[in-house]
Length: 174
Image (cartoon, rainbow, N blue to C red; front, side):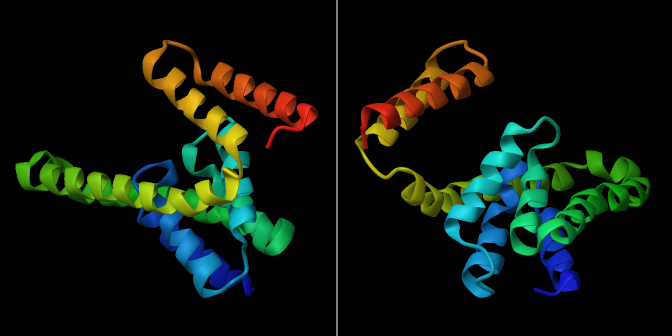
């Protein structure tokens, strides 16, 4: 894939997102469905790699760039992740106190809710690819319940899920 096209597709995804995974539906539509340069499994691996690394939640875009075009793609992904921040500074200067208006606040809340819906929609194909049997489903459900009802740091849930997955693989559970 042309690196300039990849940059603009990644930039479109990062510019239209308000939080980490809200760009996922756009990336899925553009790179998996439309252009076919990325598989569901690669996208899931990019999300996993980006979410486990420290830093901004949208860093998985760099991994997506790497899966599409290697090291040059990762550099393009990094530039696409950084560009909105550099464009936001002049925009904030322009908006100034206008951002405190009720209409602007309502618009931001609506876009945030729409992004949450898009995240759920984009996660369904990834879940189908990842949850391949009763053991992975049990790990996912257990992790979800622990995160919702217990006061445990996320890192420990990730470590526990990884250990359960490893134990299941060793025991031959699927």
